[in-house]
Image 1 (cartoon, each protein chain N blue to C red):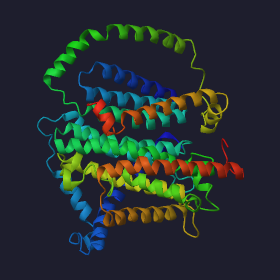
Image 2: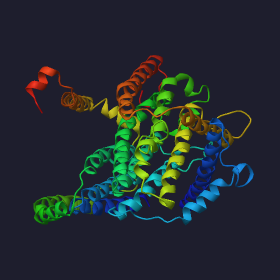
Image 3: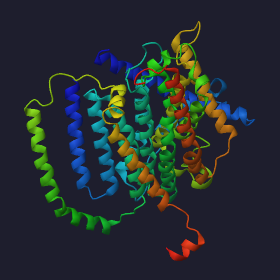
Image 4: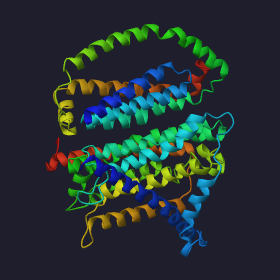
Length: 322
Length: 172
């Protein structure tokens, strides 16, 4: 792919993702309304569908100020750090056979790295706000990220072992016979746990938990800066869903319909699961959250890795280095 | 194009690294260190060292600096502390700067002498690296793993809950 075409495709993908994130906010609010037996937004456009456009216009025109005592440069930079790395993470996702911006041989690790970088948005935004609630939120964000990042990568190494590749395209091709959700159920469960934490979603949204920290790290944010944090969160949901589909649900593979349609349907279904989980689960206490990551999730991820490694070696089925 | 990108990334990393050690504000310095580490990652990708690039972003930029930020952001440095830091920085970096400056000389000569080789190098695959780590370099890999385990035990020891008898002996 030449440079001009790559730039054009990147811009098209960014546009599509921004619209998808906007529509997802409407889907979430309607979905939550349904699950909580209320209506949700239903005034702007058919079924309230245009609500997300009205919200965007409102946020774009709202005043956006740096709080007194805050660090202006860092305060302005932080929201961009929430959205840009996640957008970059989509570069390695395969939307169909050959439909990827960069078929990087380290695709899995690159996507994880991009998700890991979003923690700076929260930590720096919190520090620059010069606000105690925000700072507490930022500290929680950093500790949560460190705890859950530890087993995020490990949870999907079983998939990498079986497929013998870190390239997302090759991992999808390796699932033409059997999806990895069947052979790696524990890996999938741990991946989704860490994924929810990486996207900072309920029940793992301790850094902004509005009941005790006002709005946590984004207490002082308003207008478009505030919107960028939310954009980053919704994009992260889509990215984690896309990665889960690629790694465990056969990516674009499926009968009759074209590959990209299958991919979109699977990602949509998983993204809906994020809304469902948000609606039904309470938020744990902060120390329980961190203790669970180190005392349960990490050892389980290591056990999964050990068992998968043993099976791959015994079966002699591993590719790559095996 | 990739060499151009690599040199651009290296320049950004160099500039950010210099600013990182000369800024009096610790959080700004860390932000600049982060920029330097991300630029190094971009440099690795540009030179087709994809594994090193991805690890650079995930481990160094993603995790290690986050630990620093975690500590530094809890330090509320006022104007007085900043002034003291500026005073300290005025002379402190003279000798380290000289040493780093001298060590840069052979690198520059190396680039001039063609040590970087011709054209784009072949990509380094994870499987090749794995074979090296657990083949020729397995002893070194195991040694580093032991160090990590020692570190973990140390943390476990420092973070232990003292029983009533030990608490009497160590009132702190």
